[in-house]
Image 1 (cartoon, rainbow, N blue to C red):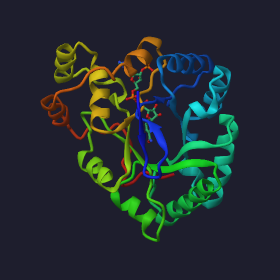
Image 2 (cartoon, rainbow, N blue to C red):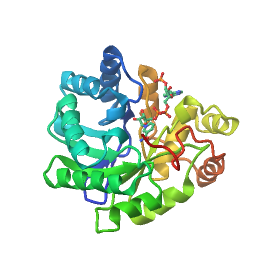
Image 3 (cartoon, rainbow, N blue to C red):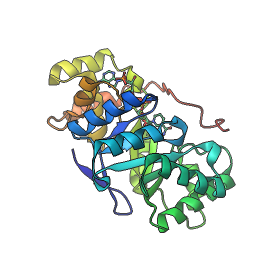
Image 4 (cartoon, protein in one colour):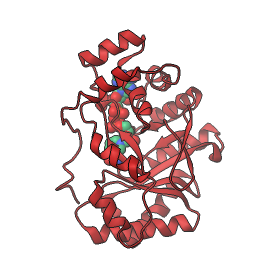
Length: 272
Ligand SMILES: NC(=O)c1ccc[n+]([C@@H]2O[C@H](COP(=O)([O-])OP(=O)(O)OC[C@H]3O[C@@H](n4cnc5c(N)ncnc54)[C@H](OP(=O)(O)O)[C@@H]3O)[C@@H](O)[C@H]2O)c1
């Protein structure tokens, strides 16, 4: 496990635990406990997941020191705009039982430029007030990031986007990396659908599992990755990727499997 350095100097683990759809206290307690034992220090939640309070309680009960943990949440699209962003951020802190976030992200850009700019202004202020260490976005195309920066706004530290071999968004990844915006892969395991013949063959070649092959491809592509699991064996399996290296030809093979198969919403229309 190692950290990467974001464009504002903040260090972030390249690997973390996603908790989307973890909605049960017992499940969250176990997942956090196993993850900490397995060496995870980064946890990714969102207002939309309705489980910030579960993650907050699980982290508190784990006894882990706050400064050892890298905590990410996201402002829900329905909570965007200047006032609602500030108010919902305060609620997120309370639910997560903390007085700061390491990373706060805009969850979806939506279709309204001005609303996104107002949201960003609130996030910049919260950052300046020391309540957030780094701010970023999710699901943004270059045009959305242009909306944020056109009047001298802060360049996002992270763009969290869907990325897995069947939907690798290579052009966007390269564009972000050129701008010095870290790409963070969501649904890195294509939500569990990674049993493809090419990936299985690589798993046999490297004596690793299909999940480990795909997650290693992420970190070797310099993308932060946050697979979700609530099972002990998988939580340990997923992080066991720092002891082997994919050959260049195998990186190329994984990068050639794109089929445009997104599991997410259509960015051109999604809003609420
Ligand atoms: N910014 C955004 O718009 C956005 C959107 C979606 C997700 N995210 C974030 O990204 C995180 C990851 O994405 P995701 O949860 O959608 O999908 P994912 O991590 O690609 O896949 C999770 C699924 O894969 C299964 N799984 C986990 N490890 C496995 C393994 N080793 N072998 C086989 N199956 C395995 C999990 O089942 P079990 O839990 O039963 O093990 C779960 O069903 C989320 O939890 C969330 O934090 C962000």
